[in-house]
Amino acid sequence: MAKGIYIGGGGVARRVKKIYVGVGGVARKVKKGYIGVGGVARPFYSVVDLAYYGKIAALGTARLDAVSANAGNYIVFLGGNMSSDIEVSPSRAVDAYSSTLVKATIDMLDAYGFRYDHTAASVGQYALFPGGSNKTYQHSRVDAYNSSLVHSRAPDLSESRSTGNGGVSIGNYAITIGGRNASSYRKSADAYDINLVKTRLPDLPEALDKTTAARAGNYALILGYRPTVNEIRVFSYTADLVRSTVELSLYRYYIKAASAGQYALFAGSGHVPSAMTDLVDVYNPSLVRSSIRLSEAKYDMSATSTGELAVFVNGKTPDRTNIFEVEAYDSSLTRRPMLSINTHSGCPGSIGKYVIVAGGRTYPGGAKDRTADVEVYLVT
View 1 (tube, rainbow, N blue to C red):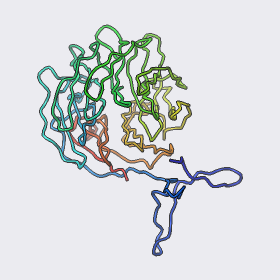
View 2: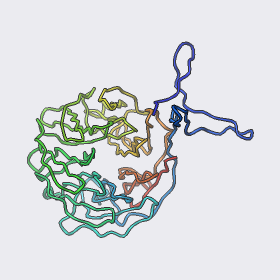
View 3: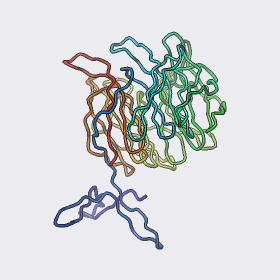
View 4: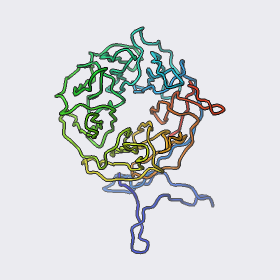
């Protein structure tokens, strides 16, 4: 699809952001435009927005920092932190919602399944949840749910590790790399196919932590932090699991990634709060890098992708003030209108035409408290 429509103004090509057409004396907004090419209707203009939908059935357990992945027509939220304070209390809770926002009945994980700081990825009809920590040790287990929400265990990771949410799928594989255990950082990389068969990939050239991932065209991009030397690495993987290195413009960590159409966006953050940035590194399907800007400098966001939209939720300002906003970019890299959200540190995910943000913290009367609220945004 074309990136947009442009019109000349003062010798400069100006991109058209909105189109209206008169219908019955009323200006109607055009959401999609098509043009005939060789007898086939080809799209040349499209606008995708988010709108607040409302709250749906709450999580079974109030918590923050869960992770989510899709299994067929369900989105599954697993694990997280049940504490409202700095102290971590890992969760073994699992919640699922259908593409029509109906909450499904699903059991908690077993007594050994408590975890936070874990990864999620979708592959085929499975939602996968590798690694994580229960505070005492790091997991190597990989929990899986199929499209009927039947639980199974995929083969363990090559090494136990808490991995952050840097899982990503490309082609017929879900990939997870790097992470840490109690005493060291990890170089290992694992891929799982649509039948949950594991392939141990070649180790990374250096250990990575705090990973985040998105797709750009036919590439999976995974960014990680090199803790021993304060550097960032971005690796790309093809659908054949071939790895290469991609350059990032500016060293920083606590970056979050999401995809908008064929673009991968790596947004915000910095190496110290005083150096936080609004920079977004953008990679096109050929892995050529460009940049756009967030609405403001921020860090500690969460992110999800809908296909056409990259969605960044919450975050903090350089002075550590919590941000209660949802910021989305469409496949032409245009920022959509900002939306508000009532929670912070929830887990975003997408299913069908909805973006769901599950759990997090609320701040009644200025005090912070974990919540089971689930807020939904409609892709229009």
